[in-house]
Length: 534
Image 1 (spheres, one colour):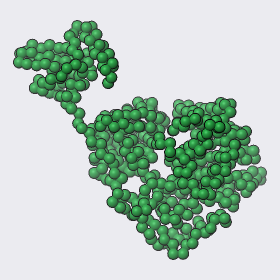
Image 2 (cartoon, helix red, strand yellow; image 1 turned 180 degrees about the vertical axis):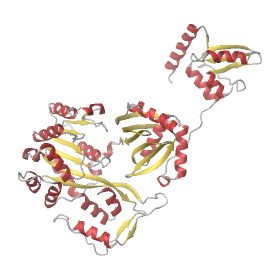
Image 3 (tube, rainbow, N blue to C red; image 1 turned 120 degrees about the vertical axis):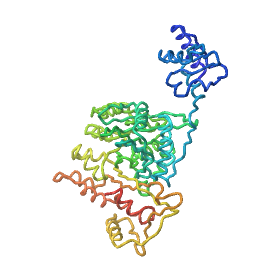
């Protein structure tokens, strides 16, 4: 607390003492003497009174303006063999004295080791830490540890007798702690206050937290989270998606694009117009891909505007517009904002997500009229996204020609190179690989499967799971002649399998094919591929 703020509080307390007809004491000055044999810690907290001076004949108590009159009466009766007097002190002064009488426990913030994740000893240790600290520190500690472990999100799940806290690390959830219901309510209240959500709502809510928290050990934690909540029979469940504020993450060179994929991306985003869509489920890296493309286009010669819910990272030189969750009830809000943005004559527009027909049509019209439009869409594959888009906008040849690239992606776990073990694939595994390889586009060389060795995860001292980090698997659907013919065929409504076949004929590698190639190169496993891909 600054000296000016403390002075203001002491002056306000002095004024209040005059109004109440009490003497006032300024506890901000001088050395504090403690008298531990007068009242117990619990009595001082209960009475909201503490001894400032005491001897065999006199006791001077410091009290607050919220000290009940019954406490004053009790103290007079209890020390009737001495002269008892009272002075009003500030709330901060009272807290300072109580910290001396009852020093807060020194909290040791243990780092969470991945090798211990899910173990009963770790859960007990982290649960104990969370039970000892204040609500803000609970959240900051969880966020700092999640960042350290490269977790993508934090799950707080209500159960009958408390709450379970899990981190999603490399796509897999790990139990970190369990806290009692009382502590969960304290944590929920802190999250709700910071994220501007209600603890009493019966509806799903969204929020955003962006703040710096000074922990009890004086370390600073940057808390930047997107909140998703849903009411359950036991309370409100929360998922907090972590935002990494390191701008170096958003580079095309860090997206692990193959040379073929990179040529496609560079060719399309170098053009002044068209629609580029990244599709996939939550947590598949869509925003990172879009931000990396956006960052590569961010030069002084271009005007770039984004419409996002929420803005996850601020780019210098880019105009970013946040669509708040409260507006989502109005289906036209995104489209209305997009139309307003287009009147500002941008070169590049990023729409956080196409979620309705009006937004889809407006985005495609923008792509047809000289704008490069970047957006995301929820679909299981690039072909499925094209089918859904056709359902929304109809089989209009003009709209179809506006679509330049649909890139579908997932994230799968990468084998730990220091511990992975080679093995000979079973006949069943070999048949799966051969079947997928046989469908590769003709311009891609078939890998040699003779003497094939696959790899499986193995634990080591620091990594019990055998995986470390994640890598993307992708497919890129471009508007080739074969794809266009299938989509705009007036005699038939194209299915996603029809579109996918046409795209493969045009040279597209599917996500499954890309994943199997990565399995053959020894960077991941068949089990991991089929955990992520149906």
